[in-house]
Image 1 (cartoon, protein in one colour):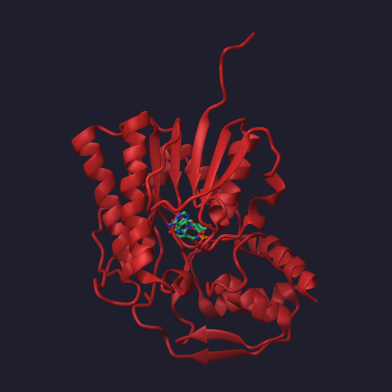
Image 2 (cartoon, protein in one colour):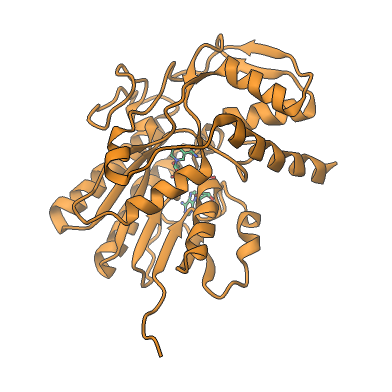
Length: 319
Ligand SMILES: NC(=O)c1ccc[n+]([C@@H]2O[C@H](COP(=O)([O-])OP(=O)(O)OC[C@H]3O[C@@H](n4cnc5c(N)ncnc54)[C@H](O)[C@@H]3O)[C@@H](O)[C@H]2O)c1
């Protein structure tokens, strides 16, 4: 009889968009997954299909409180990622990033687990360097309405590296750029979900500013592949490593692609740009290519088609 047991992996923020896809991937690979979430911005339905799986367990828990479990790896994804959600209770957002990091790092220290932090391109703020490389320190407003998220994530990175320096923890920090795909929330205010929902409902498509600001969009499957590869790197690979797509699209181009692929007759309308909204953001992913042998490969149109198919089922369910 084999004595080898499945790897025990904790995913925080597991009911969220990225967390739920990561759970699928880890279960498919044979890991024993402990999914933790307080369901603030991720619904239980995202994990409903895994309920009853013998290697899957879902626990309601808020990462701002300590957690005592035995695990081999921790993916720390808990944190609302869209501005509508993280600005709803900004103090809780900072607590989730900072106290959540302390609690998960404490757990990693106690159990000897490897720990990966889902950081963000927002640590670069409104960047003056394009494309952003990991050694750029960023241009972040510390007192703006986005600061609870940006500064919370920056502080979490600090904690990860201090736990590494002080306690020798095997940490991994990835800075995720705009990612999209099925299971994004239709009401989360992110540009891809906004445009698709507006197009499917035949509403006007709202572009903030003049539409010339650019973003790069990474399809969720590509991103999950990178997270898993990062966790598997040797202990001396800590990051931070940028993860995202390097294809750059203006908001106008994205709106045009969405209207075409949905076959929508929606009009494009323009509104004022929100404060602290960066004009351009695109990762330099050289480090990810060299360290992980990874780059985002799903073309935007393919990813949009899969995402639109998901949103179509949501719209059909409420009709
Ligand atoms: N999606 C992206 O484009 C993107 C970009 C950069 C960084 N990230 C990071 O990746 C992670 C996942 O993002 P996402 O897009 O899946 O967001 P999401 O909002 O869909 O998922 C976050 C999950 O964390 C949970 N959560 C929030 N506060 C919690 C707490 N205190 N305790 C336990 N659970 C809590 C939420 O309920 C939700 O299920 C986040 O940390 C986010 O900052 C995502």
